[in-house]
Length: 171
Image 1: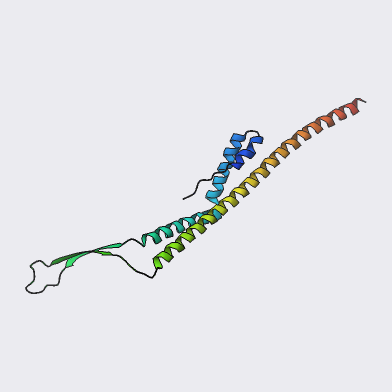
Image 2: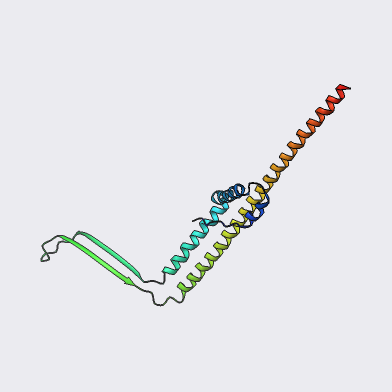
């Protein structure tokens, strides 16, 4: 179970950049990929699932239990008993624990606390990964813009150098 990310602040920041729609979609995709493939996120997600199952198990401890057993086979041959050597047995047992000194309540409360803790750990991990991806994405965007401006400066300087060189050769 992977919870869906909702990042609204990144959409606001991308309004100042060109091609904001494509960048925002790719950024959200990068964050989703980070959540899917990060070992820390996978661990937090599995802990959350485990806590959810533990909470459900603790909740179901309050319900009565139903036990169903069956057996079939050859019966011991006892003289004077029925003519058939085959025997079968079918049992259904319903049991309820009425008093257990509060163990079920304690286990349920503990499971709920573990679930709350797992949710907080998952949210913290999600936020850390989203922040890391955002930071790296913005650094990459900055470096790309910086590279483009340096390429433009290089072209401009090479043209100016060529013009100066041509003027020098002309005398």
